[in-house]
Image (cartoon, rainbow, N blue to C red; front, side):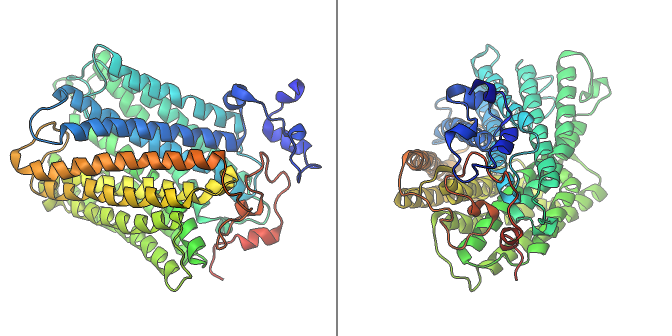
Length: 551
């Protein structure tokens, strides 16, 4: 066994062509114990690591949000210092974006992409291991700053200069290093996704036969490679401004703090699409499966996703309407932002058209997907309201903005992650999850998430500013309800933890294809998915069956 341990698991798949069917321990070259997880190059193991890490981070970020909502339960300064409140809002944002949503999608990519394109593994397995294992260190650096004298970053997840330079509390360096490591991880992950899709597709799988899930990750990976270096650049400029006497963003030295916003949002707006495009892929997989129909308008979905990715680069300044831009700039960014709603609308139309006259059943993945379509659309509409320059002056920096981006990130990205997790759990674990518990998880999450974020629209319209630990008396009733919704939503996520643990430990055995309407190559292998899949490429008929085009 020891000599074999050194073999890269992807190479190992070459040795086991004889034992494809019975994948016994002897041929698997699987390390055991801790070593297996530290040194693994298997895409399924790394996918699992990413998913668990994302969930732990999600609960951590959620715990910070609970303290924020406890502070805002009633007016006046109650539980925490204003400075600590700012630290909470900052780290909550950073963890949820870079530590929960993005690694969760990377976990899905690792697990499912090779199986969907009929590849034995990811193209660069050792880099894959490395791209995961640097993440825990990044977040350890970020979270450890809470325990330092200076305290955690307190300048908001958008870390605007001069708050993060001149007025920083001394934690900027730790924050910058953490962000650098997260960025490196993302870029490596993206390279891996692109190379896998381009080079390792099964013979016969053309680009327009790829599942939409694969397409969305393919396009997202290009976005990551385009914008992560921009983030790296801007945080390095912050670092040198803070510690080395440069003045990129300091007007006194000839710099400009608004330039920071331009560079940040040139990264930041594609970033928000990095967090939603994979969600579109997951939803486009699940809705056809439970509608028992092929996806309506497959090619238009591919083109719509590509258009969203292209347009995401020319809308960034809609975050900056109040900075005193020239009128032409305001108009340009307003119209571009409205234009990006068109391909998104095409997607929503296609999902609804897929369900139209389908034989629908409402399993938990489908429930989350339908909730996604409705609630993500609400988030989209509030985004269009924010895109209108004249009215943005009223909404800017109020709870309306918080409501908008939580509708697209929680009921959008997070709900799609849940939908995907429930959809593929039988394939990952080999067991069916508890139907009762998963329904409880869905309904508790759905009711509480709307109680949490819907009233924020009205708080924002009435003028309640965000990121502030206290508020005027007239907002007290609404905030009380929002906080109750927040606690209920936070606790509901523990039901999901229970579902997953219960599902891993046992339950009804899952067949190779637990959902009768599911299409795709991943359903042609056993459940749980063998350690090595597709050491020989799948036959053409399987690829044709997995084609999402309407026939």
